[in-house]
Image 1: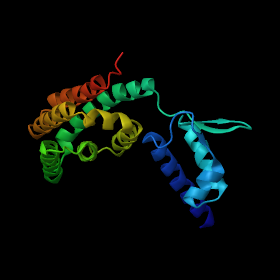
Image 2: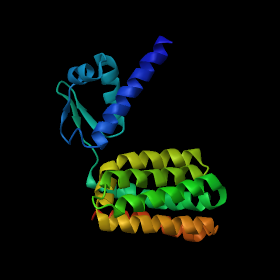
Image 3: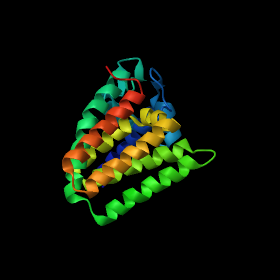
Image 4: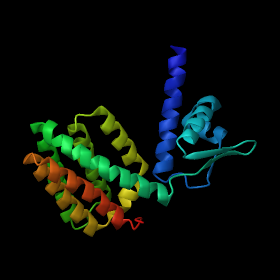
Length: 216
């Protein structure tokens, strides 16, 4: 039980640090001090050290012997690669969703679209809320693919480009187009048009990438 508790603690520290790096709390080249992080999270240095090693394996942290651990973060090239790969995988996800989606999931996607439009029409449009709803739309779509592997990989990609997504959906013009694209994807899924659903989902992600000016 003690070994499980240690593993669970390390996992929680890892998730917290990864979230803070991907959301911009820690910037590129910031030093991650074991003692400070341990004090902040109320844990010993051991789970922090183990979490930092795991983050290094993911390419988010660079550990320099006798110096410390530094944030490497996600580069523009990384984001571009993720979006290119994600566009193909989102297309596959939409294709599989045409076969496996449930009535409940279709209803949930429709409600997310309606809520997104509601928040966008507000005098003080809430970019944060629209971004959250954008993430929910894709989450339901991943579940609708009926593939645990595809859902896991796409969810991880979603986390890795969190800041970029927020910037993209934060633009009112892009947010409006994004919602329209979500509608078109859902309509294709409802018609059981797998080819169209795949094309639209693929293009949707490429449009997001173009909006971020990271093509090339």
